[in-house]
Length: 157
Ligand code: FES
Ligand code: FES
Figure 1: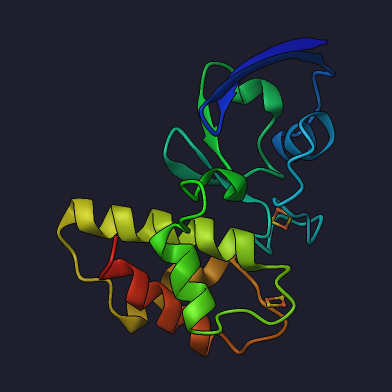
Figure 2: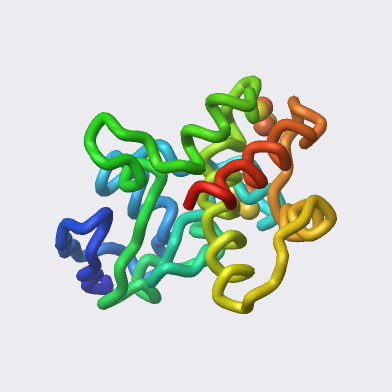
């Protein structure tokens, strides 16, 4: 067993869990934060993306124990009360989703790319967004409105 003490969406949590428990299992099964999805078992779909100390990671390939001492943000932690995060609002306004299964991962990845490009002083144009979305699969939308959503949010974050 491993002790996992982390902050999730600003709240400290501590649990003893099996050594091999994945971060996504910790979030979904221990904390019932089911907005983080599991869409594959090959680390390809990105439905499980969360932020670990502010950086996007695939929580299906991260052990819960590896997150010891870290701050984790999930899709549930983005809104400020009733007010959606600009990335959530942009997906809503641009119809950046259909079934919504990939959406939490797309939004977490989108926020991460906007922050990284801004910090590097680089332009996050359409080509860059499409390149950055390589690790996130959507079976429904054809990506057009997802890209549009991220572009809008980049101007509002
Ligand atoms: S569930 Fe993590 S990449 Fe698919
Ligand atoms: S909206 Fe259905 S998988 Fe992306």
